[in-house]
Length: 460
Ligand SMILES: [Zn+2]
Image 1: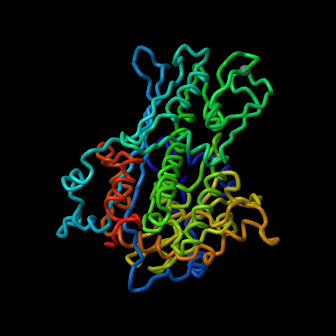
Image 2: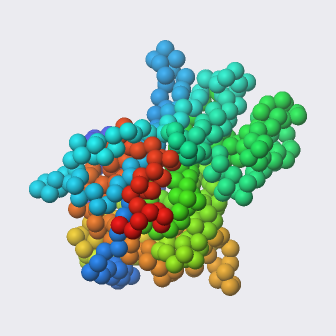
Image 3: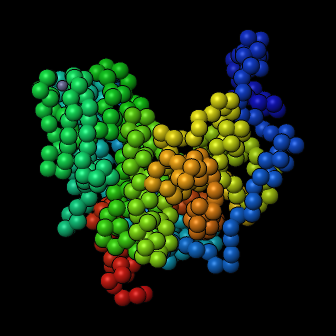
């Protein structure tokens, strides 16, 4: 959106902006604009000094994930025939080896050393039917899509060995072993389908179609026979990326919970799940709470799972206000601030992201002057009242996050020197080196065990 001082682009665009109807329309709209000097100063005053001390608290291992997709038409001759291809890559970085990856003179990541580190790697991929593709003789694209999601989420991705890494297992675990659907996803007839690990699919009595436990995610709802199914693929990609990271965390948790306090899990984007599968966010929130409760029992630091956002309206806002901020400051994005300065919403919801977010956003301007938007998980198991206090208020207290805020800041400080295409290095590596990312599941566990993070091994 254009704002004061921005020169309009090419002719057509400036004509359009100068059009009186458009001008009148804009005058009636609220939109993001740079704050005045006075507003800027007032905003800056609400930031506080970022937590720091002489010894940064860094993880020993970083797992970073990156997801990408392709949903182009499969041939020029069949323009409306679409296949979705989703790829999620994970990179595991051992922090004491990280220094060796960076050329000290240029501070560039040495791609050959990175390749050496992750020689035996491959991303996890999912292939889905899009418009005009009926998978395994399904009646509709949607039914085939449901089948493909079920089949591919049920695959063991551990890459051999004894370990199992299956997303359908994770989905059951997040839902206490049982999933319910109230309608047939194919014919919509009202019927309660119940799924357990021993009974993961059913037949609908009304239409005879198979109903799968993965239909609970509702990913198929945006799929149509001949329409563009790009949105459904994007939802699937985001959902899978979060689910995979949770599955990794769960695997380490079940094998040796203590190891989690020495690791950081990083992803690109907010800690939120949007659209049809959004309810998954509440299960993830509950699971992370359980993990942290166990870590507290074990006298360990809470898990550092961090979402880093490079783009979006929070970063747009951050870039607008950065010049007013001194270096080394932080602010929690509470709902008041978000509604007033970012969302521009006159009638805000009682709790921002109530149906979607499982993590809290922060704005952090480093001592070196770069601005970041990071998110860490909420520290509660649900979004209801606690002792009469509403969630919107509970989540906005930075103290509730304990050491996590400082650890997130330390992490960003450590990696910001080596920004790679504007991204923190682990995320950039996951993105750039998809072909050399590690096989998660079994592999991550193997590496952690070998490296002596496990409590059963000798202390290093
Ligand atoms: Zn049916």
